[in-house]
Image (tube, rainbow, N blue to C red; front, side, top):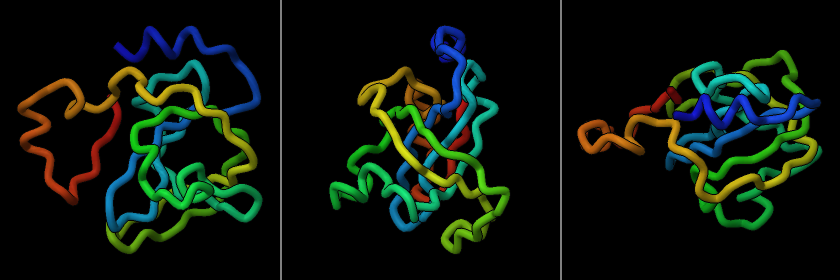
Length: 129
């Protein structure tokens, strides 16, 4: 379903981001190139030296869960250790963002499957489809 929407995105010097908030985790969410399917997105940690993440700017952490953004910035080429997941994630240097949607098309199985939603544990990290 989400492929229909990604094809209509204009090419450009930006990325598409979907906030994926999980309590206790320090990653920001999934980031992909415009026009690419969500299955190609990478779970990233933001470098906020130039620009704070949207929820951090508002001091309302996680309030933008599942929001979709147009992100301006770049991948630094570095990976960042995230202790709660014991994983390494690419670092994205955020320079600017634009809110695209507060209610975007579902990209996670738990958003459209009751069975997947019931099976999702608090510490499980979903991947977009």
